[in-house]
Amino acid sequence: MRDNNKIKFFIFTFLSFSLIILLAACKKDENVINNDEPLPKWKNIEIGFNNNYKSIFFINEITGYAVGNSYPNDSSKIIKTTNGGQNWFTSFTAVTSVNLAAIFFVNLNTGFAAGNEEIIIKTTNGGLDWFLSNFNGINPITCIAFFDENNGIASGYNSLMLRTANGGASWQSVPLLTQGNLYSFSILNNQGEAFT
Image (cartoon, rainbow, N blue to C red; front, side, top):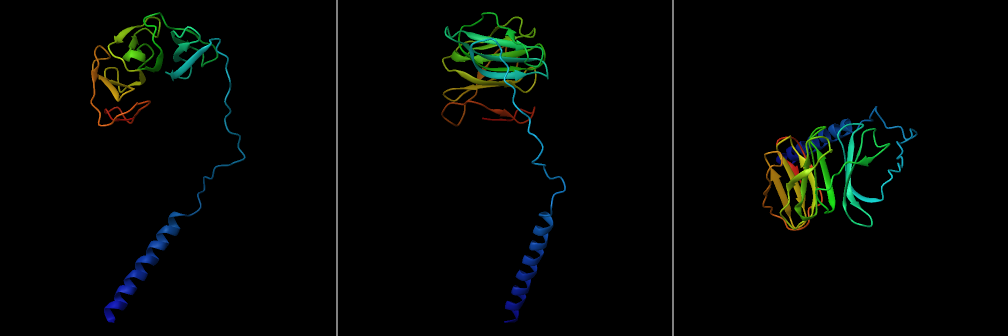
């Protein structure tokens, strides 16, 4: 009976201590969000192009790019802004006619766009000129990103995952343990970790 009392005392002490810690952790936060403050509002900007844009990427507050395909002729388009999205102009010279669905810039000059048929195109002069970086496949690429100027990955349909270690000069297939279409991924850090 004496051991039972010790066990009960121990359980009571443990639960009491746990409750004190829990209550201390749940104290009122001093930095409460004020629900009366207005939320930022979206602003609709007419860009002057009748296209189906699939991806947008801003290098900084004023310079950005968008990719997609135009309607009704379904040709690929890249547009650029240099004033924070107020005005857009065509940045793409006809390297490919496939639909583009992804865009990423490493810096102000070097960028990549990707799309159907595993097409990856690259610019090294801020979108003035584009050239083919990868063009041998059948699967659409839906997402592209770089860890640094040399190391990048691209993903797409049918478990497509490509990687480059030389700034897009060549791309290698990465075997995956999953089946299906990969629509997007996120790079966690510049150490080569990404989730899709």
